[in-house]
Amino acid sequence: MSRLPAKSKIRSITQSEARRIWLRAQRLDETAPFGEGPEATRLATEHLGYVQIDTINVIERSHHHILYTRIPNYRRADLRQAQTGDKSVFEYWTHALSYVPTRDLPFFLTDMKLHTAAPNRWYADANPDDLRRILRMIRKDGPISIRDIDDEPVEKDHPWASRKPSKRVLQMGFYNGDLAISERNGMVKTYELMERHFGWTRRPRAASEKQVTEYIVDRALRAQGLVSLDSVNYLDNRRKAATKALIESRVKRKLLVPVDVEGIDKPEFFATPETLDTLPGPVAPLTHILSPFDPLIIQRKRTGALFGYDHVFEAYVPKAKRQFGYFTLPVLVGEDIVAALDLKTDRAARKLLVQSWTWVGPGEPSRHKAAIEEALARFEAFQLGD
Image 1 (tube, rainbow, N blue to C red):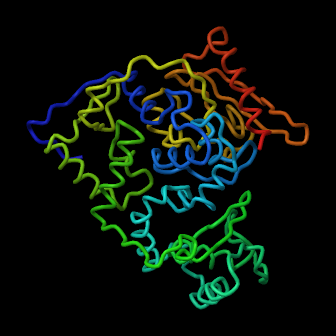
Image 2: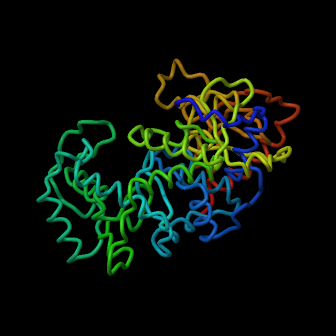
Image 3: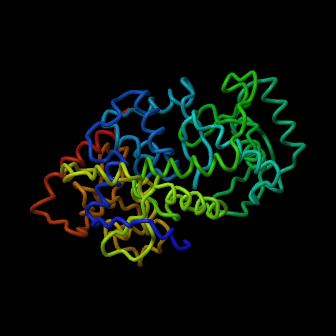
């Protein structure tokens, strides 16, 4: 970033204080910060800003896992109710496909308009006439899934692609904002006209680019506590210049304070004065088995800098070169990541398999093993429950 205003005072904090700020922002320093039931699912999604969706189901998929981590009595039906019943969350793209709060939808309508004008390269070859045909079909017959469309299979051009050409058409309509995912069963999505799904008589006004930038910065401050330009704009280089200008403006107005974290040269961090005036005390020794897609883990460089743990998603690493395992889950105890577990749910035998257990950081069997085993028992019950 450019040089900060001359009168800007830089606040110095320790790495431990930086971790505690982030853990408090992520609500991982409390047992049940959002309560329970569908309302807790809404509250958690609104606070975090997004809950990443992923297809891998070696254990429970990431969106359910992330919510369980913060809602001990979470049930999968709670997310279904929030999406399909209450419509308090919806699916769209953040840095990945995610559940986001419906209250934030105007900020995503902006990206939908941008996608309509310049489609993502994955869907650019989808025929607009085919989309219009599918929209007419849904308008007449109601919501559909990919299974309701019969079309001639084609060869995949990417490992994540579908052999059904209609999938790209549905996805183009989704990213354009013509369609909403009204229901999800596993990874099978049901598409509905967006206006009809939300019961709109008039579509809300899309936020301006300035408002979107402010929203992204505020979302990061709420869910991260301590932010950097990269952490605000994770995998979103397009808005970095606007974000940089907004952060510098807030520093000048003393709404943000530059922060130096002991032992970390880069990146530059920022926090609100209120955050720095109320630094958290020691974190309770709560144990969390985290998804590799958890907001605390997904930004690998940030996690490595603040926790001293460099997570590698080894599902994409050749088996012979894996250190920890195919689907490794970091284990957080208090404010430290102390272990990495390669887990797999054997649904037929109804048990959770620990395929490898590696101690990392300050992890020690004498200090942490019993607490992790208790957490594994709870995690197994969640994996095999409703």
